[in-house]
Image (cartoon, rainbow, N blue to C red; front, side, top):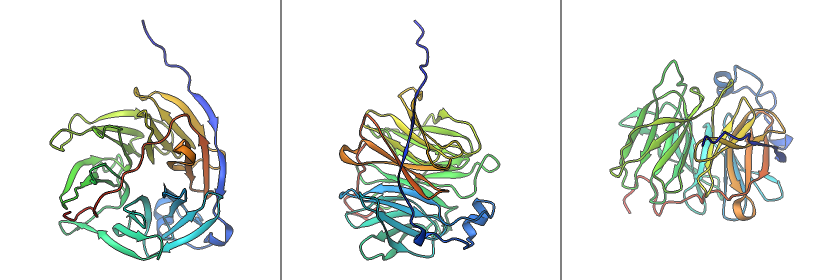
Length: 314
C-alpha cells in the first residue's frame, strides 16, 4: 500500500514582543548590513534565541553587537554590547552564554555583568570565515558552523566539533553556507541548515566521532534557504526559513507536518522552544525586530550545558 503525503497543517504565529524603539539604531549604517543586506537601512537584526532557567529569552543583534534579555512579560533589557557581530547563542553555565561572533569567533558573555571574553578565535592560527550557530551535546562537545560568505559559488563552509579536551575536529569542509545546527534525540545525527543550497543536511555520526554518508534530508525553495534549527522530543526537526517566512515542522521522513507562518515580516531566522513545558516555539523575525510564537504539541529537546568550558581539560 502506498501512503500519500498529507497536506501539512498551516498555522499563523502571533507577535510576542518587538524591539522597543529606544534600542533601534535608526539611520545608523553598519558594515554587516552593507555586506549582507545590500546596504539597506537596518536598525537591528535579531538572531540566536535561547532561554535561561527562569524563562527569560535572550536574543542577539548582529550588526550592532548587542545581546538582549526579554522577560516572560515581554520586557526588554540590554545585557551586553561589544565590537562584534553576535549570532547564535547557547548557555555555558548559569551566567555565561557562548556566542558565535561572525567577526571574533567564539565568545563567552556574562549576562549578569555584561563582560565579554574570547573563547576560541582561530584554528591553527587561521581566522574563521565567520562562525554562525552552535549546539552542545550531552557530553559537553560543542558543534558549531563556520559560514562566512560561502555559497554555491564557494562551497567551503565548515562544520566543527570542539571537544571538551580542546581537540577541534573539522567534520565537514565542503558546505555551501552552513548555518543552523541541531542534534537528534539520540545524538547520532547532526542536522545542518545549508542556506544557499536551500537544504537541511543529515550528518550521521560514527562511533569513532567521524561522519559518513552525509545526505540532503530536506529541500526547501525560495530566495533564502533554511536558517536556525530545533528538535522536539519526538525527533521532529523545526526549520526556520527566511525568505518564505515559515517554520517547517518535519516528521522523521522530512515531510512537513506543520507550517508556521510569520505574522510579521518574512525574515524568520531562528527558533527556540520555551514557555511552560517548553511546548511553545519562539521565532526571531529579524527585519521587523519581532519575536513571534506559536504553540506546538510536543516539547523541545532540553539544551545541554557542559560540565567544563569546552577546550579545557576537566
